[in-house]
Amino acid sequence: MAQRTPIRSFLSIVPSGQNPDRSKRLRFPKNGAASDRRSGTRARSPQQFTKRQSGQGSPAEEQFPRQPGRRRISDSLNGSANQRGSVDGDQGDRSPGRLEQIASMPGRNSRNRSFSRENGRTKSGNNMLATPPNASRPKNSASTPSRSRNPRKNRRGTKRLRSISPLLYAARMLIFGVGLSALTGTFLSVWNPASQSGVSLMEKSSSQIEEQQESSGKQPFRLGVPTVLQLGQEITELKAKFQGLTSNNSYLGPGVFLVDLDNGSYVDWNGTLAFSAASTIKLPILIAFFQDVDAGKIRLDETLTMESKHIAGGSGNMQYESAGTEYAALEVATKMIAISDNTATNMLIERLGGKAELNHRFKSWGLTVTQISNLLPDLEGTNTTSPRDLVHLMAMLNQGDLLSLRSRDRALDIMQSIKNNSLLPQGLEAGATIAHKTGDIGTAIADAGIVDMPNGKRYLIAAIVKRPHNDPYAEELIREVSRTAYQFLNESRE
Image (cartoon, rainbow, N blue to C red):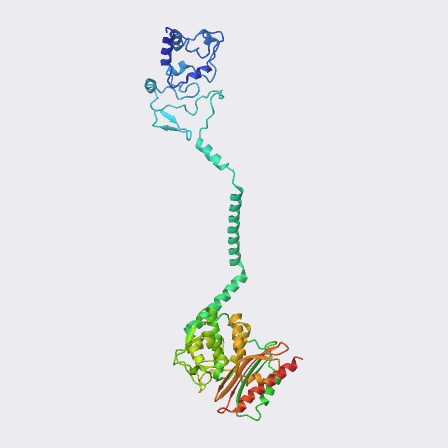
């Protein structure tokens, strides 16, 4: 008990911030006053400590002088302004008495700063003392773990050094490649002169369409741009044979237009003149019907109701049905062509938008004189067309310019099912087929069709003849024209 009193008094003097285990760093002789190195400091008497405090050391301490970088406990207690750090860089005594002592030193209030652990800079306004950045460090750093001055920077560096997943890297490269390709394609499309010329052509065509719309006030309806009828050389020999057929019937006013689809050779015998269309006006109405089918404006199975205003005399049997009878749209179109039903024609004219709408559509196809002026039956012959218009229309039908392939095939099937075969079909030989449409009123008779020969060749022909009322020689003239054309084209191909 008598020996613990000075030790306790000594512990009360040692700064509270010191680590007692740090006394291991003080070296003592093996045969010194204390047998244990840990008890070397505690074994000193108060008198010995007083001597050290006054600058006098023990003989053992004189034998082991102070090594560079190490500080004695007395150095931290003497209040020297130049010795601020502890032995290993601790922050010193933080007890109230010690703080008052340090605060009373000259120049301490102005330099009361703490060392920031985040960025290594000193910050004012903190009463806690820290070792300045230029303070001496102990050389032996093995006992004290090294600590980075800026842990945040180390964490950021660690994030940067993390390895990138191969899939993420590949995805980034893919996105970069797609973006680069898009930019390159945009640049090439802008720079390419060919595309620039194409754009200019499209702009010109669109401006022309706009001009046509402004002049007509309506937008043309068509699946594609109608092909201009390409003509080759005129077959003068065949034209002369046609003209010879009317030597005995000069009062008749014929018009014939023929085109060989293999080479474009043609015959134009009054083919551009305007004639009464009679029932041949139903052929462009049929094309307009299937155009609306392709556009989704009308369905083949759509129900059409026959009204009293639609009923018309003349050809056809629908006129004998009562008003309110319903028909499928495809059935109405078929009756209009196959039996040339006038009532069915009037129903379709109304369903397709009326006479003005159809006339505008005919113009957009390139038909120059084809026009509906009155509903059927047009016994006065006010509805007009020309042999060239009918051939041009059949040429576009044949090439698929106006209809889809499906609608084109349906239209040709309907044209082949016509019941009146007394005109152009009479001039064909066995094995030939024809898809056509006839027209017959008192002052004119007509027939126009697509002829397929047994050898696989095809030609287009349209014939319209003005006549005295129901003159039978007009019908015979059309049959002779068909026979002459077929024989001439068949012989020229052998």
